Image (cartoon, rainbow, N blue to C red; front, side):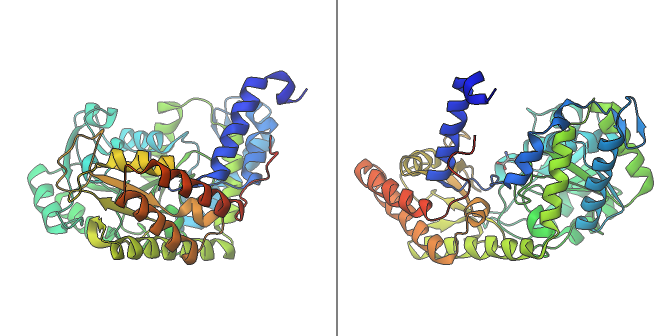
Length: 414
Ligand code: DSN
């Protein structure tokens, strides 16, 4: 029986979401369009299999095929990141990070991460997350120019003396200097942990410096710039740390691995290892740069005045409207983005004075500089006259036509 016949409600809602993804412009910096092949294996019989443990050391029988699959995912992941160890079982980036902390730290140990309101991530020690509840968390941030001041990080690290420093961000548009972070970590005897969830797809294409050999441990999600299935991974080059990470993930914080997702991660890594991938990653950055240049030319202020990666962070500190207002207005025009805090923030985290825009998903559709320039101009038109709902509706129609020329998935997919 088909899903359509068995569960019409879910079938219709899934198709509605397919339509939303195809007709609108997806500019949330952490989202992307994965390959149909990745989705095919996620919807396979692999979802039926329990395989607690690791390849050749399982707690269940019948793991011959999934052992080979997990080994392939591990091999491809190691090749991709040029490292000697990979754990491909974390269900998400947050669980990967939780696994890293529990492998290397004891409750109450000090960690130093990037402030959430400066572009860090919840799991980098935010007080509302288990990373800020189990461990004593301290923070560095960005300067008013939107950049990390490594001398300030050094000063804070010397005062705090953390056992682990986390680098990596969710809303930082500039290159992260992993070598500098390692220097600081060495000075205070800390582990350096790089969470590269946002930039991993650029790193593996050589478009952003690699965290190896600087970081002791690296984590990532597989669905952002990597364009694979939703999930997490952990990598390192140290045998002792590797053993601790494996035990921390299973049996530490997870039970049965999601074998259908691990197979999909392997398929995604195969794509990431191709020559085509390098072209994609380069285009993601070129697209972000033209987006940034056009918005600046239209008198919009960007945090750090531009970008080196896949995202731009607009600042509305000099405007009468908020990030929330901008998010809503663009949403009416079919552009999905997210409001974001900015350095020197004056509004609440739910309102904010910024907007984060990313190019990974649009680039996956085949958008290039020409399209990004015109999208940036539409964004500026909308924000220049933010209460003009008629204009938003007109632009929505134009963008629908533009999107229909860049088909990402077949219409009748489900
Ligand atoms: N939620 C992700 C982001 O949007 O950056 C981070 O996990």
